[in-house]
Image (cartoon, rainbow over all chains, first blue to last red; front, side, top):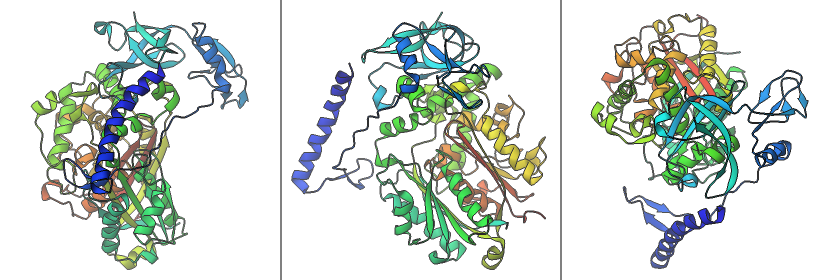
Length: 177
Length: 396
């Protein structure tokens, strides 16, 4: 769950903030020496919590279909371009209201990497593989799952809907065949 | 339109600069550039500030830098083109002079990444690309994006880990000589091979560090440059291009299309032979945020054929005395990569190279053609800026 992931993180922050409170009590200022250099640093007393709210109205269908196990792209009926990530506007033809089509599920891995140094918001996952697969008309970027020995450029993969744990939300990944 | 020359350069020490604020850091470079150009702040009629920020507290860096450096009330703006922000700032100031609107302008690049913990910075840079479709669900990191290129390149051309190691060793070799560099020590192949993975196949020693730093250049119109100096370094040509936000919208992960396009624009504008441009250029700074990026840059700039960039590294052809010296200031890898400052830092390094002012004689390239090339890529080929500097007045 999202709130559990958050709680773990908050605990680490709490420890740091307690130390900072102690410092202010002793010195009357939130200034501390940087461990390596001893340079005095002011620890910001103002916190900014960033969690964006991203509009998805024009591609709602994508998320609706994920719930039915389908991964959709959009297609411009005028120029036949397939868009993934899906978008409702074709800037080439300047038309909107594109057609929804299901993506082919089988493809080939073009490239991949294994992320060891992770962003803090991904630190609760084990090291993950991110790959780009060629599904014919479009490429898809996603996590690659399956046995490591099959992981190579050119490997066959299947695009599938998965539940991302521990958050428990629907997304998609590439499974090594 | 007038020709535009660099008439003054300034560069701070790069590194973990927690001894100063963002604006104090900028002033180190701005002061040096003003003194070198011998101009007063009031004569700098426009200044641009390359800065990406988010890891540092000031949301209006151009304004904070302007006040601290006494550049008010001249016009300004903060310029963002990810890791190419410095070159974008240079372009903005260059066009202000070229258009004839002002006769003296300044480009400042400054970044202070150590105002946030390293992992917060990893998160912020990872978000640069297409936030929603790439980062939100798949947590790509900056080394991760370039690792996708390294994997594809290795698979297609049989590049070895050691080829990337050669690039890192060269960077550290020159970084060790550069008093402005973040890392001033040599590394061995053994140390390179043993360094821990950050995003396979890229290791810690494939990666440029998280750095604080500033650089500045004073630009002048031809008429003004003639009054200020007898050794102007001209901006002969600049090329600019962009790439898709989503990497999945690209088909080739062995080359950066935007960089190729920008380079071709420059070569065409300057009348450089597309088959062997390295014969007409004496030294280059390329965007080696990761070792693989330098190898790809050799090819995108046509210093080597496609698939043969790794051979230039393997044969040590990009040291001083080789086919073309590249990143003999230590590059992003060892000099450091304060995101918004990097492009301006390249302009400073190359201007000084052309004037035989490299900080160490072993870093000095032989200047035969009077030309130096800067290749500055933002994001993972999202932005590309290629700039040609010359001691010869353009059009002669």
